[in-house]
Length: 208
Image (cartoon, rainbow, N blue to C red):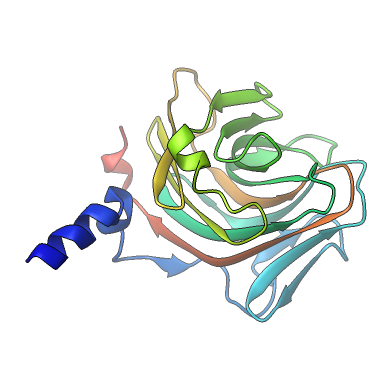
C-alpha cells in the first residue's frame, strides 16, 4: 500500500485521468494523415516525425487533416539547436491564416525563453500564460520532453514533463475547434522531433 501511495503521488492528475481511451495521432510510418505546407521539411524516421529547417524566412506547420475541440493530447519532443535561438511549438484549435504560411490559434511553446508557455499565434500574438518555475525546472533542453495539453471548453491546461506549466481560462470569443499542427519557426537552421503522439477526445458536454 505504501508503494502504491508513492506511485499515485508521482503521477500527475491528468495522466491518471486519461490513461484509457487514447488513440495514436500519428501512424508511426508516414505523413499521409497530415497536411504538409512545405515539401522537404518534414519526414518520418523510426517512428519519429522530424522537422528540419534550413533557415526559414517564415513559420512552417505540419497540420492534421482532422479538427479537434475538446481533448487531451500527449506529445514527446526534442529540439536540436546548435544556436540556442530556435523555437517550435504544438498548435491546437488552429486554422489557416489567409494568404500566408502562418496559422491562427493556441500554441504550447517550445524553445528559447518560451518553454512551457501558452502562446496565441497570429491572433493576440502574445504569451497568454507563462510557464511555472516548477515546470521549467524539468526541461531537458537537449533531450526528450513531454507535453500534456488539455483543451476543454474555455479552459486550457499545459503540463510539461508531468508538472503543470500553464493554465488559461479563455474570456474572449475565439475558435474552440481546429487542427493540431507542429511548428518549424523562422530563423536559424535547427531540427525538431516529435514522437508518441496520442489523443483522447472528450465529450463536448464536459466542457467548462
